[in-house]
Length: 226
Image 1 (cartoon, helix red, strand yellow):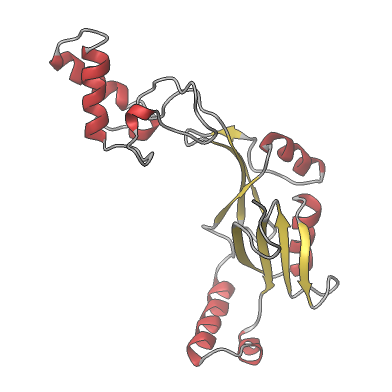
Image 2 (cartoon, helix red, strand yellow; image 1 turned 45 degrees about the horizontal axis):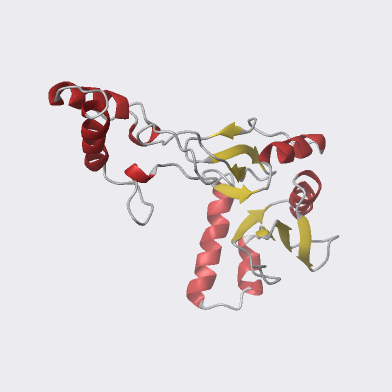
């Protein structure tokens, strides 16, 4: 099902102190399409950039004296905007903000970004939560994680092979409930004790429980848990 123009599964709005530089980065380095801009592309004060139906909107940073003049909101809204302007002046924008953007082939996209002069912070890496991704910072310091869902070879809860896994699937049917959510640790633990270590390995319960604790503590879903 296609998404109507102007409707995006991801839409974020970021503040930029240098709109021309930010717009150029998203268009020329990351390959976003400039869907709309105001008042014009030569003097952008606001822009909407789109990649695979995912929208990043950029708005120019304003001074405190400009807020009241351009806002038609309530006094509470104007006060909120003024506080945001003051906070932005005191702190580096983008710190603590990470935006995930999906691409069809993250490795190919990573190479295209580098060929356009982009400087990713890392090479594409397959994560235990079913994503293969890399990170890059935009000119204002906002961090973007570009990712592709991948098929994992084993359950990240118990370690069983995921032979029929869908891209992005982390857990096997034994470790999830009817809604596909991860079961509580104690449920997975008891299943591992009885089904694997006692049933398949023929261990007595005491040894099976110790082995299950050590095994699950190495799984990404329960790492470090004893």
